[in-house]
Image 1 (cartoon, rainbow, N blue to C red):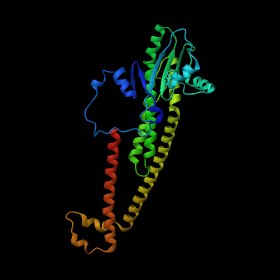
Image 2 (image 1 turned 90 degrees about the vertical axis):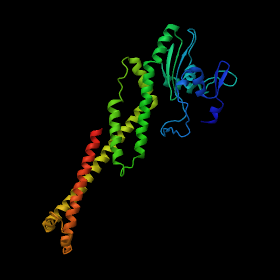
Image 3 (image 1 turned 45 degrees about the vertical axis):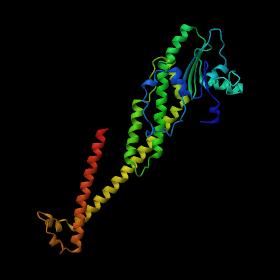
Image 4 (image 1 turned 120 degrees about the horizontal axis):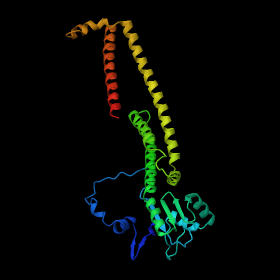
Length: 318
């Protein structure tokens, strides 16, 4: 995506990979390629998410060091930032200010089991670095790629949905897309009730790591914004419904007053049975006016009934 990425590569034994995709499908998962669709993709369109960083891979990684090692703040920072080696083959550090590295590590690291084990959360990676014995490290790795991994996926899911809802709200034209507004309100309500909750992990450490992931993804701030959006939509829809009901009541009142003044019986008798169109040629101005009011009132009544039925069917589908 930028010039700095052009100088990065992955070194595995004697092999060099310029792209993560090649490393994944040749080294990490060589057997998965046989199960992918290799058909022609010329006319296939993969929709890109306009609200998410494109071409960016999220990494979950686990580092197991020997027991007599010392995990420094620089090690924690490098683990979080996925800093590899420089051109000379020495450890690369993406920052030079030790105070910045210290504040970053203290903010992003979950140090409940320090100084032996640290979980580090970043926008692009979820890392664990430990110097525990092999038996303990295996148990930590099982949690790292077990319950903690599902917490990671759930937080990513929350972030994508919240960003999607925010993007949909920015594209809605309030005066023209009443159907989309109702659909958006329904989506926000369903997401809040069914998916966005805290009690997903029973153990305290799992809950703390889950909340830490949520914090650094900014999901709570996004959720507050989405709830504010929901309140705005409810307020707008309430005002729109009241205004629409007021207009409808005004129209029906006008029709009632006009029909009461002129009386539909001036023309209603001529509309019974076979209609005599020749008799209408002798109508006065007021009779024509009464005829127009009667016919338009019938059409408006039918259209309102059809619209109400359509809205009812649409609501029952959901």
